[in-house]
Length: 269
Image (cartoon, rainbow, N blue to C red):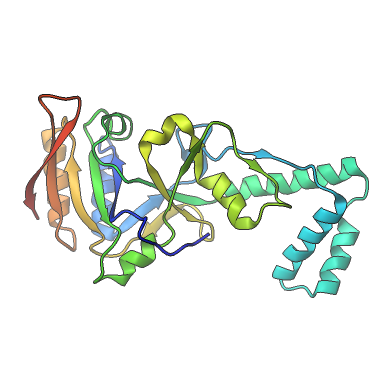
């Protein structure tokens, strides 16, 4: 699943944040401790996110072959893997389908224990400011994706992949789809109405959801929402000043002539 960045990757990515309530504390902690929260898909606000349809119309021979390959990757010899597959996999079609359903349930449990960082390549979308930054009262964090001086930035974003938007739930066949394709369908696909989000994701399969360390100086800017509370605004700026690296403070304002935003650099701290 991990793919090195290429020229199609953006030079910066963004994260909208609600700073009301505990939100401001989370932002201060992030800047102080260089960490970001990777939530489980179970925490997403879209109930359709990571939802797939599973195709189990496979022959027994196909299932045995794929399961044998799986056991070999786990360290078994080919002969032992084949023998185990022949022993475990049912021969009756209805039982074979039930065996596959049980494996799908196991996949769903593993998916719930996957950590996903959701980012975007746009920072001035009024809808996203409304949804993810609590009616423009929050902030938008700017992350350096490409920095020739910092290999750690490249390493962190090496697995960032764009989300694809389609009209129907993706169809996964664990026998005919390889692992990379199955993961892409499950974690990097959303419904077409969300295409305005221009989302990118970093998916952490191995260490689950939770706080993850981020490289120092990977944050290059913070955009303040149009309606941010003055007290919270000052706390954000103070946290940026204490960050281990320079951060551009940018203020969003309403464009007087359009339904858009103007982003004006205020200072660098």
